[in-house]
Length: 380
Picture 1 (tube, rainbow, N blue to C red):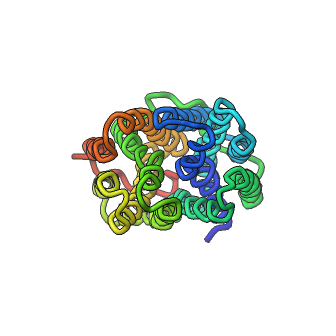
Picture 2 (cartoon, rainbow, N blue to C red):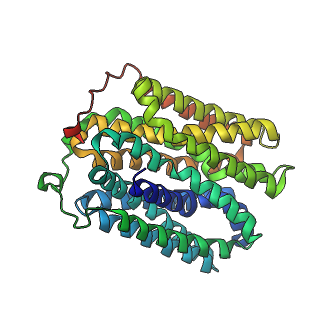
């Protein structure tokens, strides 16, 4: 395996699995420390998702300098994590979470471009989805970190900052073309018309993102509120991450069947997992099956989005991926607010069932999707 793929997977693990989605894992501790209700907690997470969007937009406008984009990923995630560790006031804490979330927004577009220029064309689809599966690795690491720090969540977030900075440096060292020179046609600003083939996946990504917010933001909290306690819910998060690594198979799924089938399978599975957890958050077997299915299907689903972008706008692969991941994050921001409010006014089962329905709606844009054209080496 190419060293860049290994380092890139680690960067996704730290920026997504730790600095971004680690918020949901540590939410019970944050709630106790800052006295936040579900509505405020959802709003803070929504801010993190929106900062991700802003970072992704900035990254797309500097796609000709992927090393700078990767450096920004490491810097924002590390600075935000340090801010979380040092926070003594809710406002400072919220701002730090928002800054930390921006790291992932820089990471994906920067790594997509670095993989493009370092990995052989025939291996790029699989390489992209392997790197994307790093989120699962990060979630497992986050769970281990909770146990290792024994409730000292501030220490855990210092560790997150150090790991993120170190991994970003490792990515830069494995890039074999460190001069950041690219085809001038790839550095021109993207025009809206160039991304018009992405209308369907943009809608699909936004709906899928909204659905996923229920578990990403509140999954561990609803499990902790039951009879299982902290160990039960943290182990569930680690199961989610471990099965998320299976998302590396997304490229194979698309190649074996096709994009519509791959999208339908992964999104439907994610929706069913969300409903199941909402119904039985305190029952170990169904709850663990639920988070395992969610982890595998969500990471695979986001990997399918990368392939969808690459096949739809091959000449603008990085920018297309950014657009779809922004739509995913916008959906997650909206979902965090809406489902946070629902949890405050209705039952867990009702809120998570609503999230599942939204996920099923995300399948519709892929219905009757034209068969994508086959990539050629020149197309990447």
